[in-house]
Amino acid sequence: MANEQCLVIIKPDGMAKGLAGDVVRELSTTDLKMVGSKVAQVTKELAEEHYSHLKDKEFFNELIKYIMGHFHHVGSVLALVYEGENATAKIRNICGATHPEKAEPTTIRGKFGRVHSQTGVFENVIHASENAKEAEREIKLWFKPYELIHNIYPIKRRKEEMETYSWK
Ligand code: IDP
Ligand code: MG
Image (cartoon, rainbow, N blue to C red; front, side):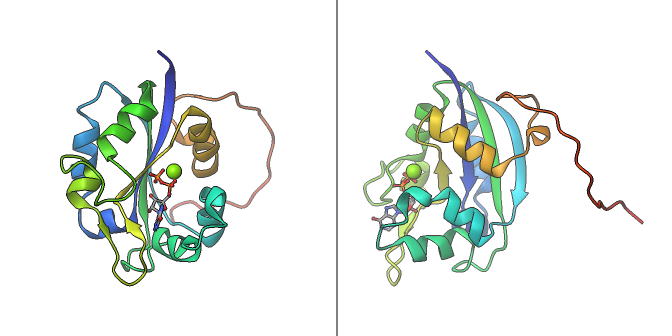
């Protein structure tokens, strides 16, 4: 059994429906550990990179609008990183199938997902990485090393001069 990570995103429909707590509670029934968490705004650039493997699909443009929150009037998603043995498989089991109508009724997507009648997008509440390799790509896209409670992937040090903000 492999120790691995999994990126979870509570998608805009999940945020708009107040389901973040339900999802975290479901995920806490596993033996996995939460090692990162933040509320994030999804830019077009981030959305397109996250779903780059789907760019040839006919639903791609609608999917980008969906994950950016355009259909639910929410500007943010909740991004979480879980870690533990077979994290991706355990979490995807709890999520259920991609198509909400095919998802087992007891899974998150089965309980709370829907197919949008106009856009055809599967509004399925939660994203979870498909495997450990995808998780690494996605976590590096969504999180900086210092936003996680430990260095789950090798890091490099570099000096960076940048303007920053502090509280007045
Ligand atoms: P996954 O989220 O179960 O890994 P992917 O195939 O990676 O499924 O698709 C990413 C997301 O794109 C899905 O979660 C869903 O929101 C949306 N999606 C996938 N396939 C379709 C489709 O055939 N029609 C509409 N939306 C889809
Ligand atoms: Mg996927």
